[in-house]
Image 1 (tube, one colour):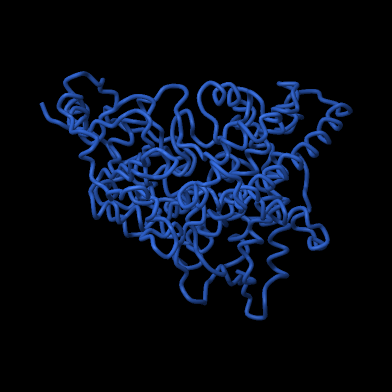
Image 2 (image 1 turned 180 degrees about the vertical axis):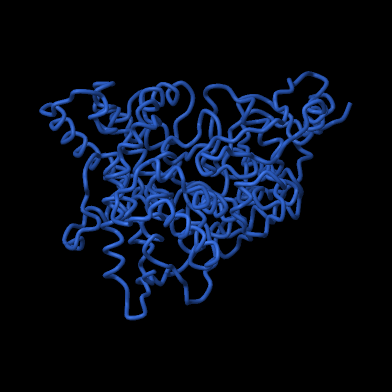
Length: 531
């Protein structure tokens, strides 16, 4: 027998050939539909497979040095890895060491194991149980479980939480968040927010039609206004003309950016906060306390409204009200809102920055989107319906292709809960396995002509397209809980904006960099031109 578990999977699949290409029905949505494949991923591990596996010490990767391990590689000035360029670092790992790479010797955290084999990634996803462990953000774990255990208690949410606590909390909020009828209810509110945003964009242009240097922050304002409408059931005023007179929305944006964009610094560069309260850790705690205070206030206001609201059916309830009514515990709704705001503002905003930049620099594909949107929405004054959005197949495929080539989330992963054999190596329990989708989505092995930007690949049945090479929202039990709302916000923005305006870009090309997300780095000075 061969030494690689992958070989066993392929052997088991010989009577049912691998199909990498995803096919969608005419009414399908390539941006939101869960992907399927016919790879046999559930081959059972047995003693013979472990006996034939290579040892963990043989996994290639950068070797740690005494005392500093590999942590020194992330230290500014002396280290060789720049965290803002970590997408390039992950590609370097593949080129230098191969399809499996061990980054060990990280002070205060488990080893990282980078896996660049989509077959193995699929096998791991499909074998996981009902409570998979995602590599946590230790700083958030510490905040929820220690610093503010008085608030979070035994149900601390879904972000940075694992095991039975995660399962029990998710079970309480999953149904109202993921129900299509809940999402459909927010098409009109998100459209109203987006119309306000486009009016702001029209006024913000200079004499050439270019948007301001700080336009990425304006996108954060739109994103927060959308999330506030969904998670807090209120308009926060992020797009009002007197925005500057109300500092609270900008404080929320700044706090969310700080909380997420310093995760890598706290966990890879300077993990000393685990032992002493460093200035960075203290600021992180203050940011999180601000979030808790804000969400609690808005939830309490929603509770008061619910007491006097006449409800004839569940369809009359907002997402927040559904959670409050079904659970009866305002703490559940508060923590749900906290998690949605914390991870939603920056992730959606950076995804939109990337999508709009690619649209402005790929005019041929942008025109195809505009033509499709015009066919679906011949009257620009008519409100958008959920059925209209469902017909925007090419537009959704464009977004999916942006996510493949420029994955906003550079990777996903799991913390092993038991020993495994990956790419022929015996990997012990506790190792954090990273699935670097920013790399696997651009590998010839899994995608035909990966350097070609081709939205049509998501709508056609020919060519290679491994369903687990690019997973912007993850897969399985821990798939992104807010993905339907993220889809909705992005689709409504593209439909409203490209129906009326052509986007162009007339400045120096932007490089991509990692903050917490992977997005264009620099002023996003798009030009808006009436069609």
